[in-house]
Length: 227
Image 1: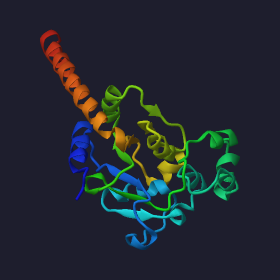
Image 2: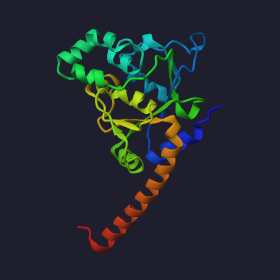
Image 3: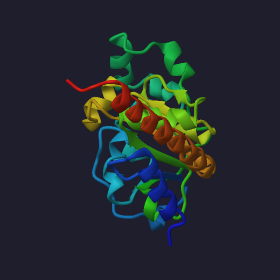
Image 4: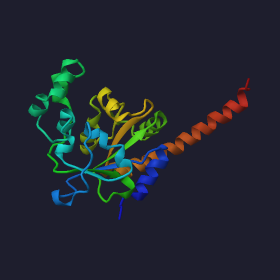
């Protein structure tokens, strides 16, 4: 039975989500108890959208095509990520520098499995992912003014949230291309241990937003005629 069904409903309602929030959990499954093998993907971020509909249990090999993502998720060391041909292409283009890679957030452990699934059906979650519209970002920022705006690559929001930060990414050129993320969507990551606190703050901030919106609408109707 899910322990997050009600939280998923509240999060979707408060942020006006059009896609289901996703639970990311580490080491939830053992190697002998995985769901069906997942189709090969260009990067770990490509599991996020299909996990809105179904559970996906992945291992390091499922993330291996993206060296940088494998590094941020603790699956390979920095030296191995830096030696990847794909990393060489990113660095060679000037998209990132070696210093950027060294500064990128990464999980402080190597997970044996990484599971992605709809939050509403999850029994365990370490990080919650959600796709945000600009309005949803406004709402979240009102509730969490100290949230982290993550730099590229987009996947750093997962280790940032695991470390306790609510993190938002505008996406990155590589991830947007691989995932076909719409231009008007961003992605946020919320630490599961902070989820209830975030929801309570969202309830307060959305109530305040409604109050000022009603004031603005009434003020416009009273003082400004329509053309």
